Structure formats: structure tokens, C-alpha cells
Image (cartoon, rainbow, N blue to C red; front, side):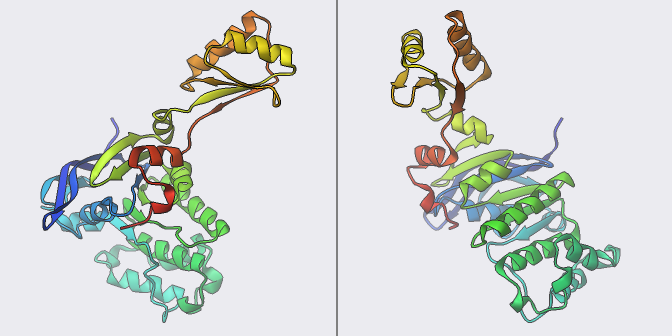
Length: 314
């Protein structure tokens, strides 16, 4: 049985007469990447603040790392790390000094391996710049230093709030690699991001939050299959084969110029096999075929009525 790193039931939160979270249920298995998506004002930041003990819920139960966030907030804080949307580094200090400061401030400082600063500088490829002021670091280096500081206490669960916002493509890829390495070490990642391709690339499961309510949960592929538009695309070698296939496969759409046939499908192995078997019955051979599904942009638009340009943190 998979252990839940985060378990939320009936979470509610209001500010005055405005309900921000309206009965949220979440379950995040340990050792996975869970991504929370939602348009501006959906309640993502409030959710993270409740999970990290920064905000008290009005109702519901929330357990993080096995601890109740209301009754045992200190135990929760000892089990988590939080990297905010903006790098929280002291620019007047060097990279090494920033890390050492986190060690000194840790309640577990006496138990922390004294080599941790050097190990983290090496792990995040910051050793050569370790003794330079953080003010001289690039945006990508600051984000790496920020995440390294989060790891000082060896957290079981890490909350990453838009960790790659503003980074160039190369730095984004570097951060993705680091996240995968953390996952391989058994760390649980709770990720919010404005990049849907990032959630698609990294997340084991995704939840879509809109107007304080969860409108969908599942793996990226499960969410894509919920949206109409999945189809199998065949390309044939001749107009004759294309025409025959079009007659055999109902509801298909043909393109004579491209010699392609688009056939509605749920994208499952069984349905694709049935299509291939149908063609094989009549000795028809497609030069190539592909299963095309809506991407997360399509899913997000269908579920929330907003496009990805509005996927920003509240």
C-alpha cells in the first residue's frame, strides 16, 4: 500500500465573505511529483500556505508527512522544505554563506553533517561560484542556490512554487534534472507551475483548481483523454488505399493532398489495435500512423475556460 505524503479532506478557507477553497480533497503518494494547476485566483497559493502551516484552514483535515497541520505544525515544518516563487537568497552573502546560514538556523543543526554545505554546492554545480556574492549570480544560479538552501534540513516533502519562472530554457532543463534527482532520492515534490509543459514533463499526477474547487485530477494522460479530440492519424501510399480505408473506418476525415486519414479514438491500446486489425482484414498497409491527443493546454482551457496565459500564481 502506497503511503500518502499529503492527505487532504474537505479543505475549506475563506477570507471575509470570499470563499477561496471550497472543499478540497487531495492525496499525494510519497515519492511522487504532484502538480497543482489553476488560473489566477484559483486558490493555489492558499492551498500551499495551508499545507505548509502558514495559513490555518477553516474546515477539513490536512495531514503532511503523517502529521496534522493544525495539531502538530512544528512536526510538519521539520519534515518539509519550501521554495517560493522568487529566490529567497541574501544577495549580500556568498553562496556558501547563504547555505551556512540555513545550517545555523536549523533546529537540527547539531545533527546536520558538517560537510553538507560543500556537498550541496557541488551537487548544484555552484562550487566555483561558492565564494562570490549571490548578487553576481544569474537567475538560474539563484534558483539553484534557493533550492539547495531548502535541502539543508533533508526534507521529506518539498513545495516548489513556480521554480522555473523567468529562467532561460537551459536553466529550466537543469532544474528539471534536479527535480528528477530529488524524486529518485525518495523526496515528494508538490509543484505549482505556470508552464503546462513542465507539469506534463514532471508530474506523476495533476490536479486542476478553479474558483476554489478541484475540477479534475489524474495523470497527465488521463486528463488528456477526458477531452474530445483524441484521434489516430494514418498516412497511406496512394489515394486508392486512402479511399478504401475511409470507407472502412466510419467518422473518419480524409486529406487527399496529405494522403492522411484522421479517425476518432480514445487512444487506448485496444481501440488502436481494432483499427489496425480492420485495415489488415483488407490488406491495407499504412505507411505510418500516430495517436494524437489534446495537450494540457487544451485540457486546461476546456476545464477552466481560461487559456494558459492566465496560469499565474495568485
